[in-house]
Image (cartoon, rainbow, N blue to C red; front, side, top):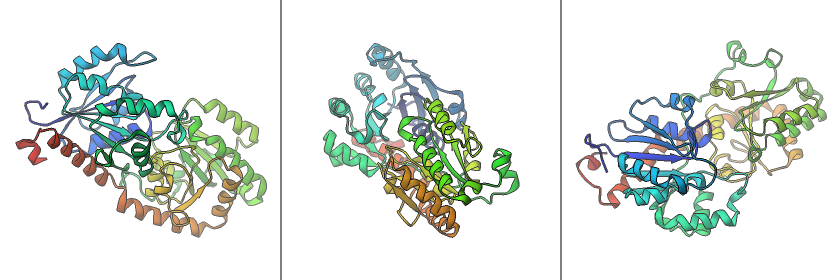
Length: 394
C-alpha cells in the first residue's frame, strides 16, 4: 500500500472538486500536510474544476474525474476498483453521503484503511433527520473503519442515529488560515473592490454557495426590515452577498422585491474573499443547517463579529454575546433587530471581533487541524498492521 518512495498515499474521494467549503478544507489539507511524509490523490465522482486544482500548491497530487452519470455508482464500480488497485492507497477517505458508496469498490480493491468524513447536511436532510439517509449510512457502516465528524453535533448523530462506536469517531474541526484571513484596516485601496456607491457604507456581509440551505433570502428580508425601520440604517447600511449557485435567480427576485437593489450587492464568486471580508463591519450566516462553517471561522479570523443561526455546529463556533450572536433559524424579525443593534453599537462589534480572532488562534488554526488528520491517519495505518520504518517516522 505504499509506493517505492515509502510515502503512504491518501486517496480523497469526493462528489465534485469545485468551489465549496468541504473542497476548500481539502485544499488546505493537501497544502499543509508534510510533503515528505504523505502523497495524495483526488478522485471526483463528478468533475474537477481548474480553479480548485490551481489552489493546490504541491505538484505531486494526482487528479481523476470519473464524470459519473446521475444515479448510483454501481456502473462505475469496476473502473473504480481498477483505479484503486493501480493507486494502491494506504487510506481511502470519502466525504459526505455523496461519496459514501465508494467504500464498496474501496473494500473490493483491498484498500487498507477506509475513512469517511461527515461535514454537514444538505437541504434534503436538515439536521440529519432523513431516515432514508440514516439507513443508507447504516448499510455502509461495516465497510468504514473510522469516521471523522466535523462537529460534536455530527459526532452525536453518528453515535445515536448510525450506531457508530466512540472508538471509531474522531471529531476534527475545520481550520482557518490565520495569515490569509486576518484583521485589516479598511483603507481606500481595499474599499476600491466594492461598487463605488457602497464604498463608504456600513457593510453586512455573508459568503457561501447560493442555495436554499444557506438561506441568503432570509438575510435579504431581515436587511430590508432593518432599513425600513431605521433612518440611519437606510442611509448607511448595505449588504454584500458573496457566492454563486442555483438559488441566484430566487435571490435576485428577493432583492428586486425589496426595492433595495442599490443597497445590496450580489458579488458572485470571488477570488478575493479575504480582502472583501476586510471591508465588512459585520458577518452573518443565516443557514438552515451547518456543520463547522469555514466562512464563520474565516470571518472570526478577520476580526469580525458574527451573527449565525442557532443550528448545527454554529453554536460550537460563535460564543453568544462574546464573539457574536446566535438567532433562531428563519427569524427575519429577530435578525433585523440584531443588525440594527450592531450598527448602533460599533464598540460592541469591535470587542466581539477581537475575541473571535483570539478564539480562532487558540482552537481553529490550520496547524491544529492538519496535525489531527495526520495523527488519525497514522493511527489507522498502525491499527491495520502497516507499521514500518517510514510510518514510525511520520
